[in-house]
Picture: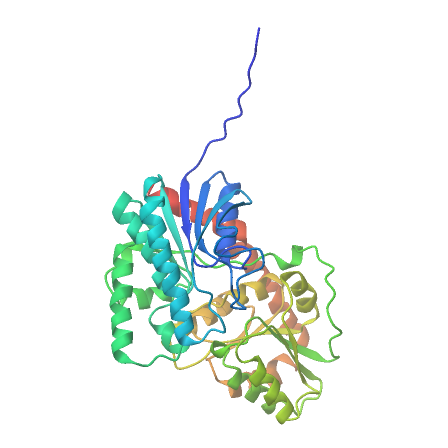
Length: 415
């Protein structure tokens, strides 16, 4: 007698993820795809050829290299795109549009003949990458889930410096159209609701789906980090770009330069790092301010462990930035370190609710300097406990497993 055993695993859903940025680039789109596979989903990913952030195509990839591959169970299909180069406005637009047109072509001639239960769009800038998903929705009636991580066209003003009203008005109409053709609008900040509803009656589409962080206290890493200066260390880690409002940060440093024990540590790179280096040198701040450059994720637990406070900042004068909850805030909270912030209401709401630090309005370095003098340095032990509060809040709200489980519930509501 012959006996056969079959191990048939149940496929929860078949999902297409569309995003311009994917592994080996470091974005949350990776977590979405890989974690859904772990939960029994079949996942295809229509993505770009990796070139972020350096602007050059990664080694091993190209027009005729690795256009299709399987990464951790995800079937990856790479659309053609012009690399972003050094990130100038025209070059960025060419980069964005080449991905959109190439992906629409792929959807029409390939993905439209496949069956999917849902399409997820990971919408860091640009929002136009939703169009391939909308095309598939029109062709196959597949529901589209747009995860909004940035508000357009506002991001064109704050990040790209675009002020032309005709261009902004045109893009705004495109955004309204995109929102209207998506079945669900997932928001990473509760404050995004205000902006989205100002563009139309989309209230029934909106679902809160926050960002998350790797649990940095559980990262098993002995990655070597450089020796840090002695003193009370305030650290800013991540991109050093225009949105981080480094003008206000250096004014904060200047206003507190009389406190010799205070040290400012910058971990990361970006478009404003050279300017920051020059400012530190020109103002003779090299004894209190240190820019250490980029380090991999594995190094972050070591850095954060040695920080007395973690600093998060955003630019003022742009309403949409006031709604943003920066991804670095979740990482700071996961590390269990107290937070100091010059930020809008999106991030300030989280800091207040978690009681994990102090937040002042974006750009208000004078208010934050007063808090550091009169609250933080006067009672360091009480300030340290705020880091514990943030860690507890992270464990409840911002762990990766909790957030992806929430995404699965959202998907199944319409299935």
